Each structure stands twice: as C-alpha cells, then as structure tokens.
Image 1 (cartoon, one colour):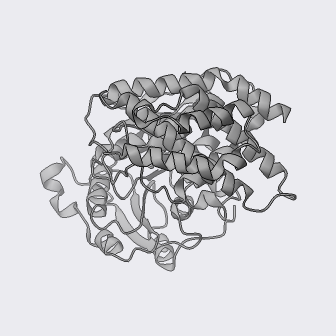
Image 2 (cartoon, rainbow, N blue to C red):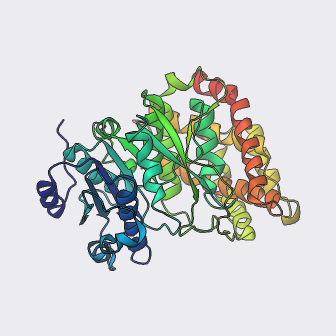
Length: 431
C-alpha cells in the first residue's frame, strides 16, 4: 500500500534507525509543555513495566508548537530511575522521536503521521494518548495495548469516569446517536485515547479522507464508526478518571463542533445500509477493572448558554423553517420565550432535531450542484445554539445530582434516541 506521507524528515530518520517495532505509542500535541512531560514518563514506565520484551517507539506528532513541547519530549526519560519503580529493566528501552507533521493542521493529520509510522514499523499495536492528560498512569498503556496484543482485539476505545459536564458534545449527541445508529454502546467514541491493531491502522491509511475535516477534529468519530461498520473486533478499556484541560461547554466551540458532528452526519450517508435495520443496542466488552473514581469538577456558565440559544433563534428562525417540520420549529420558539427559571429543552424535541439536521445534511450533500459549497457549514453552525439549549437543560436537571446519577439521565437520552429511530428512518429514506 502506498500512502502520501505526512512524516517529517526527523521522523523518517528515526524510522530508518529503528527499522521495526512491536508497539508504537503516539502523542499528538500542540503547545502542551505543561503536561506532556508527565504523559511521556507514564508511557515510558508503562512500556517498561508491562511490555519489557517488546520493542517500542514513542512518537510525538506535533502540530507546530511554539512552546517547549518537542524539546521536553526529547529530554524526558525515566530509564535512569527504573530500579526504584520496576522489578526488572526492559530488554528494549523505548526510543522517542518528536517531529512536526505535514498536511492540514489538526488532530487527524497528527494521527495520520502516527499511523504511517506504525505501518512502516510493522507494529502489532499502536496506542495514541492525549498530550494534555494529568490522570494518565503507566497502566493506561497496558489497558490500551493489552487487549490487542493479548486478546486479539483490533480497536480499543477508552472508558473513563468524567465529570457530568465534561464531554457534553459526546453526552448529548455523539454517544447517543452512534449507539442508536449502529447498535453498539461505546461510551467515549471521541475520547482521545485509543489502541489499534496493525490491520486497523492499515485500513485507516487506505481511506481517502485526509484532506477533509476528518484531518482536523473529526478523526475520533471517524475511526470509531469504521471499526464498528467494517467488521473489526472492538472493546473498551476502563482507564479511571480522565483529568485534562477540560473546557466549559458554554465557551466558544470554535470549529470542533461542526467538524465532529459534520463527520458523524457524513458517515451516516456512507453506512446507511448498515444502520437502517439495526434496532436497540448492546454493550461492548470491557477490559480492565472498573472502580469508583472522582473526576475534577467542570464549572459551567448556565446563563451564557441560554443567551446564546436565544440569540441563535433570532438569527436562524427563517433558515430553520426551510427544512424543519413546522411543529419542531414552533416548539423552539416556545422554549426561547421561557424565563430562565423555567427553562427546559425536552429530550424528545432534541432527538427529533438531531435527526432533522442529519436528514438536512444528507439532502444538502445530495444536492451539492444546486447549493452553495458552504450549505452544510451553515447548517451545522445553526445547530450550535440548539446544542447550547439542550446542554443548559441538562445542567438544570442534574445540578444537584452526583455524576453517577447524571449518567442515568444520559442513559435515558440514549434510550430516547433508540426509541425514536423510526422517526429518522421514515424521514431519511422517504426524502
């Protein structure tokens, strides 16, 4: 297989030196000097402790950091201290390379460089971990690589304990929609920390998507959806708490929301014959020991989200009427008129709207000759205020609940997505 390379010369030189490796651990980064040293040390300890006989390489795939991120990666080593933390020294201490990548700026391009390196090294397992983690431990490497090397899995998704307001895009749309569509309960389909088999990596590299939004923020859901739909063996690994640089969900989402959700909707068009007949969902194998942990709280600005919703209604009401069923558009107007203390964005309306937007996205894609090129960008941008409204409603409902009880509210949302799937099917295949 021949792929257009995104590997920097520095990475290619290291590739020639190493030749082959059993495990590649990739760490995508951009200005993460405060946290990346700890991540690298945890990875080195994990490889040494759990895979002492495997030849391993740690690759920092950097998006052009202007701080000391790459310098810290090159300087970080635990191997002089291993006598104090390990019973035996590794046979092959992991080597490191820190290099920028070529291609579109974004997480997906960083992943592509890591996949290329894993493919060229003929690695049996490839693990990718975020560079802003503060909760990573050496055990994470065993939990992400172990199912592949020991159990023969192809794709290992993370299963974390996260604060109820961390990962609201996942909780409100990505997890419940993916689960309803494809019938597999993968709790963190865009989690950021994954394990892949060699054949999974080769499959990813064979796809012609690296010049699209997948190469920016859509990579995680793209990988998860391919793994589900193309016959790969999938499990989840319980990693404990995810403590990282979490963002207030009321803050500006930048391009992330539209690239993640846009990729999700795009994949619905690619795999429509797969999800049409699927009813309900079932759990996925869970690797590791699940225990109770307590993630750091995420503070949210409730009033800000409601204000952004109401401003979005004023801006988009005429546009929404062009594709939303009349009843759904009228219910949005009614909610926008509610005072703050009575604010509620019902679950059933949110599910219908997500399905309505998915259908509109598909229709725009089919009619791309007669529509402006940015038609779906406008569509996705107009979904953001509705996402703020649903998130605000979730915050109001769960603000006095511990995180484990808030998880039950998310479970009810998932059940609603599954129950209302006939609404999607009727609209999607009729239109």
